[in-house]
Image (cartoon, rainbow, N blue to C red; front, side, top):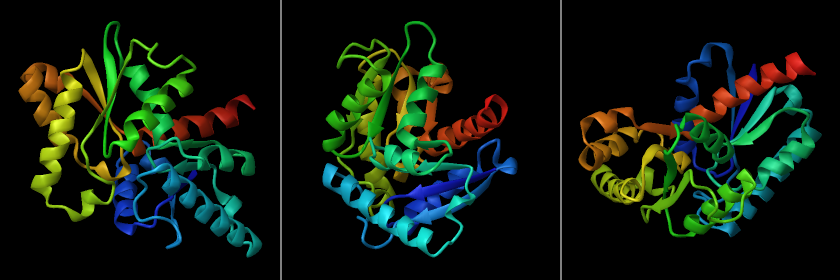
Length: 248
């Protein structure tokens, strides 16, 4: 199976981290990860609606050039848009390619919902203030419910970081901000699943679980699910590729 992992920002460091996450999934032996990082015309860090649109334009132009050059763009069995947002590339690429397309945002929602037991909730820990409304509204739209009507979704807690900060700030500062946001989320309800709401958060599960120990205690923290969107998406696309082959 050939899956394109498409990072729509221009950060090679972020792409590298997400590729490592993709290759650590249980299905990695049966998946060939193709990688694309957006050109320098795309933002280094996607932190606003304007950044989403700029990254979409940059990627579509790049793919259009690749198609003109006949570079093999149709050799993928699925495409992963590796940005934790309601990213316009997901529907755009779905209309251009006859293969499964998902984003790490959409895959994380499906994964979190599948892990809950009755009475439990899930939530998102992410970066800046912009994402509180953007991601919350996106979750409700994806689930097909009115805003605030899902009893399973606890909301979004922001750290004040940007996606780029995970690769430029000191680890102590990043961990402190992420821990503070995690604490707010965990104290907001009966949270059994935390979604890492940024592609730059790859590898930071330990900070979330350590905070959960302080809030919930050792046993409940051990049982907490922490969803990495890249891993969730690779597993989902693996399933989708198989499904398209079996059921079509």
